[in-house]
Image: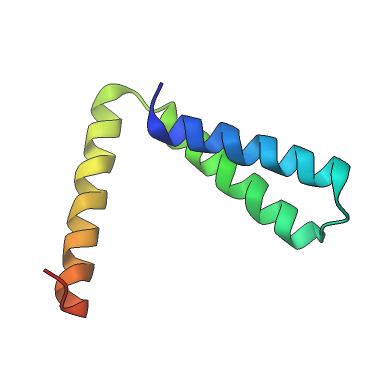
Length: 71
C-alpha cells in the first residue's frame, strides 16, 4: 500500500473520531475529509500516472527550494 493511501486512511479515521467524540468545527472536518479524498485519489493512480505525478512533485519542490535558498 502506498504512503499516500496510508495517510489518507489515517486522516479519514481521525475525521470520523473527531466527528463522534469532539465538538469540532465543520471547517476543520471539511479540511480533513478533503485532504483524505485527495490523497486517496493519488494513492489509487495507476503506476505510470503515479510515476509522472512523483516526478512533477519532485521538480516542484526542487524549484521551491531554489527560490527559498535551501540546498
